[in-house]
Length: 535
Image (cartoon, rainbow, N blue to C red; front, side, top):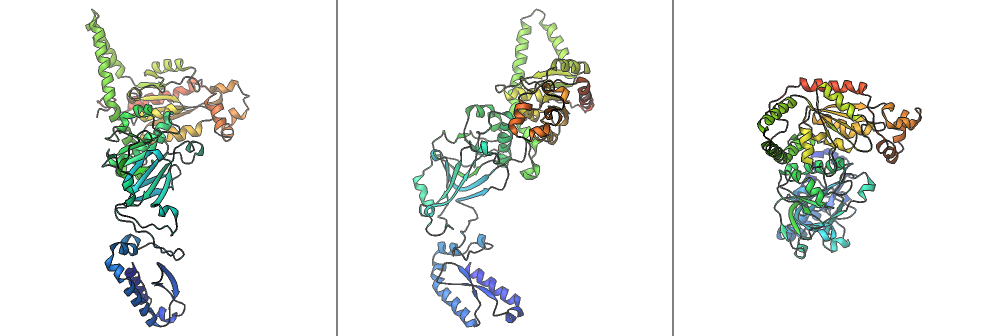
């Protein structure tokens, strides 16, 4: 850097020409002082000879170091530092960064929803202390001023990150375990031997927080895992903090299509796992969506859905084969089996010609209290109607199968609406929106559904369609101006509009939306392949 910097100054001198001669007294020039370890600004002396004398002195002093020690040379010059600003206050030189970035930790904390760090080099886990250590291929020079205790201990850089995608929400982030990322000198790794070697990168993330709610499981977990790891083409190991066996079992089919390797329980597996690189934290693009402009190969939410399709199809195929086998067994026990089989086949063919309408039914709050009448109306209109009431124990493959084979889905706003991701692009999603939930319904499900390519219909109920109508005066803000109530905070919204409200649809009013869904569905060009996509 010494020679490069000096050359640069000489170039500036010639370019400025007469300006230097005219303002020689006030012109400042960066000059190297051989008695210090850095650079500082000094007024340019009048005599050129003084400058030459200084430079000659420095050449004699530094020559042994420049040509006799490669490590000293790397301290003074690195292509990566050419544009670095030198500090005259600390009298230190910025540390060189190798082209391979060995032993480095680079964190991006600029996003509103998440922090993410990239660790490159000899990466080793230490689950006992919730730490990830990285060692460079050779000792890196620290930029920390002399006397720093961490530098003396061999610690070059220390970052902390909570690998969960709700960074702005302090209450839940307080429950997420923090991971320490520590860069240390290469000489320290002898005290931290590897137990398991991996030749692919790791992605660290947490399944804590709001895990247990299907919206958060997809929005804060599975989708960010896809976004963060998809470019690695399954050559990645997932290391999970706050690991839950049930979560891994529930999403195992999906994880197996994002990684070729079994996930690791970060705290439960006490072995030292070694990686060439680690991504700590997950990226998220928004609510239940993927931004193609931020993805390698412009991957979108449709590509994520295709991953779901590949993940669940083998299980769905097995379910179909089991049902057919059971039906044949039952028919074989009947003397009229052949006749019954023919009838069944005719009925099945007839049903498949009808648009399939699925109602995601809720038990408890936000249920449709006149659902039976809705079903009857839809069937008379020409729909084949199915009612699905999933709970936490319902196998996702079964839910996927039901929605993937449907043309229209109806549901009242709530976490279960996350399952719109299981609908085929081009099908219809009707979201019934209770009082006080308009913003959330549009933000969390409406806009993302349109991005998936669904024909989205929002049905905002009137006060008289709410069970709250009989509990409050018709001029009460709870009925008249729900936004003024929801502004008071989440607890008000939850207790009044989410936990305390059911819906009785005005079927005359709702019918026009159902008619639109029916006409839209039957007018679409029907493809010959089955509703599920075999991969």
